[in-house]
Structures are given as C-alpha cells and as structure tokens.
Image (cartoon, rainbow, N blue to C red):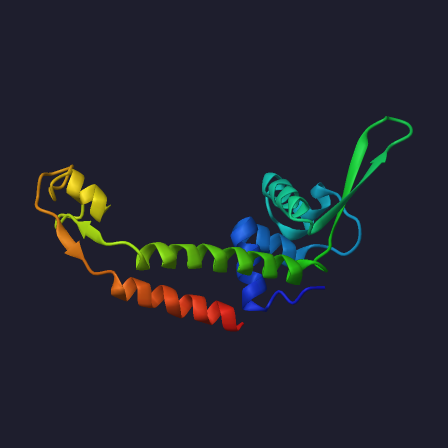
Length: 164
C-alpha cells in the first residue's frame, strides 16, 4: 500500500479527490468491495464514494471487476485500490508542471508589461501602445510593471523542481 502520510502523495490525492475522497482512501477496506460497502465502512456519502472511485479509476488507481448475478441478472461492481503506479504518475505531473513553469518564465522574461494603477489590466507593450498607454477599462495612464520579483520566484520554483 502507498504511504498516505507522504505529504506529496497526500497532496496529490487530495487535489484529485478532495478531503472526503482522501478520507475514503484512508479507510478503504481491503479486497474487492462494492461502493455501498465502502460508504458504510468509511462513513463517506455514497455519491462521494462513487465520484472518488471513478476519478481514481480514470487515473488508473482503482480497479473494478463486474460480476453478474446469475439469478437476477444484476451487475455488481467490486472495487479495490492499486497505487503501484503513483510514482510514475507523480513524475508525469512534475514534468508537466515544470514545462508549464518554463513556458511562463520564458514569456515573463521576454516581454515588457504595463499595468493600470487601479489594477484593471496588465498589458504587453504592443497592447499598451494600441491603447495609447491608457487603461481600456477606466482610462487611467498605464505605468511600467517591473516583473523581476515574479521572474525570480519562477526561477526559484523551476530550480527547485529540476533538482528533485
């Protein structure tokens, strides 16, 4: 079983399924169980259990087995959790985040920005020239925006993720 006390894994699962879903995962019974059994044993609402199971299934963390009752013809869905691939999933998420941060860093470093002092808009230099350096919302004069602090924070975040 996965270490649910690991803050990275815990945070990732919480972002996928929320607090109630995480509670369900923590208290999930062993073996193949129905969604009703999970709801009864965990105290989580049945709709939340089903939503959580489907999210986990879509992310390949839950396995479902369908069984048909030979007498009634009803289908029963039996669920169990499988977090063996979570490290791989986390690495994919990290790479995606790193790629997005690098794209944003490149955009911030290679552009000049102007903002409205009232906080209405932040425009690129070209956009600001089109509006004659007047805010298109309120008409105030736009001022140069120094984004060096933001660029520095992005660089630190990229370095931190690259080193892990």
